[in-house]
View 1 (cartoon, rainbow, N blue to C red):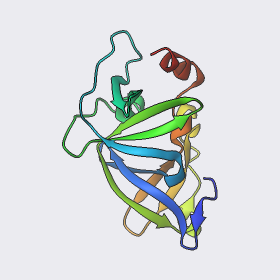
View 2: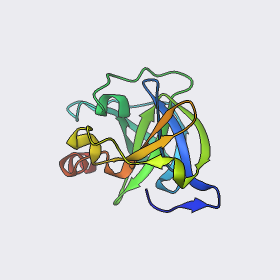
View 3: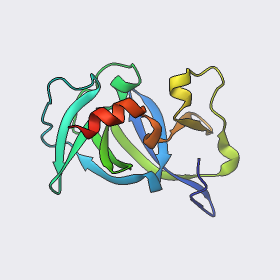
Amino acid sequence: MSRHKDQSGERIIVFRVENEEYGTEVNQVKSIEDIHEVIEIPGTIEFVKGIISVNGVLIPIIDLADRFGLGDTKFTYQSKIIVVDIRDLQVGFLVDSIDEVRNIPPHLIGPAPKTMSEDMSRFVMGMAILEDHLIILINLKKVLEEDELKQLEKI
């Protein structure tokens, strides 16, 4: 994790994907959007749900559950899109819900498990070990591989 923190620790947006809690640093997030109309694009990468328009900008939507190999996200009233700038491209990540923004003290953040797959270890930055649960801390800017980003740039 970068050292974006205040006196009480890392500022993390906590969200859910398939009943697991994940978190990403607040400073990675450009905006959080409700789901309105997602326009499907045939022939794209399987985990690309389509595109949305935000303030006139077309943003590809990545289903994080599908990207993680957990199946498709079901759209509900709680579903959100986390928009992140990756290079010169805005990318939206579909999540089941946004739970909260919280400060996590550095002493509660441990390393990512060594048993994690190489693909996941590229973007899992660590684990927040809280009293009754874990939050998997990820860098959304590293979720997509280089060739996937190049395909998104063509949309």
